[in-house]
Amino acid sequence: MPALNEIVTPLRKETLQDGVHRKLCELILHGGLAPGQSITVASLASAFGVSPMPVREALTRLTAAGALTVVSGRTIGIPRLTRERLDDLTRVRLEVEQAAARWAAERSDAAMIETLRAALGRLQDAEQGGEVALYLRANYDFHFTVYRHAGSELMLGIIENLWLQISPYFHMLQSSGNYRISNHQHEAMLDALEAHDPAGAAGALAADIHAAYGTLVETLGLLD
Image (cartoon, rainbow, N blue to C red):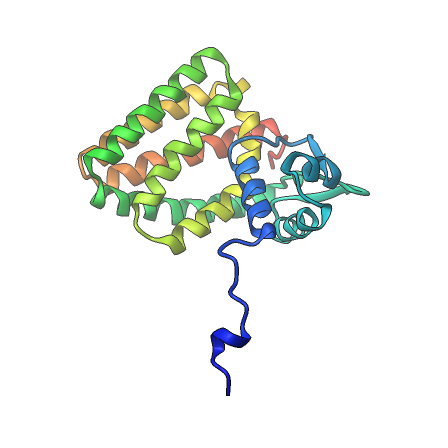
């Protein structure tokens, strides 16, 4: 019987589909696609320099995950956010992301704090300058620095899936002044993380999530 390495072709570390999927996730998480905007398979294939097939496959995965939806024909956009869906996302975010903040506070170190301070500086500059795209990228950098430092790849994946569904709506928070309020909560979170205070870090994060929730309910007209 031949050896396995003689009959099995080694897999590539990353398939083309996985690469396109990762790029699409980054596009969404970094604020590159807002509610009301749409993209097409052809435009994405051209931007990524690939054929339409891996783009379609990646879009199918993201549609199944609730991050994207078919708007019409070959046009893809952000799904409509209902009150029921927002409530569900918020409940789960509070549970999972607060746990990550507590774990990160227990493991915080000088390198993480330095990275967070730099992200906070970018958040403050973007808020003062009204730069939505820069704010959303810095907001992602700040939060996911915390979540990565929790030390759980499983939890990190869960949080990323939640953010794929909610983060496009962070575009809608700027006009209400939420970015300024959120930066105060980021400051409180940073202070708690530096002090190795799990309860304080979780509390500041919860305040950030609750504030965004209240603004979205009002902005989207989802009041009961």
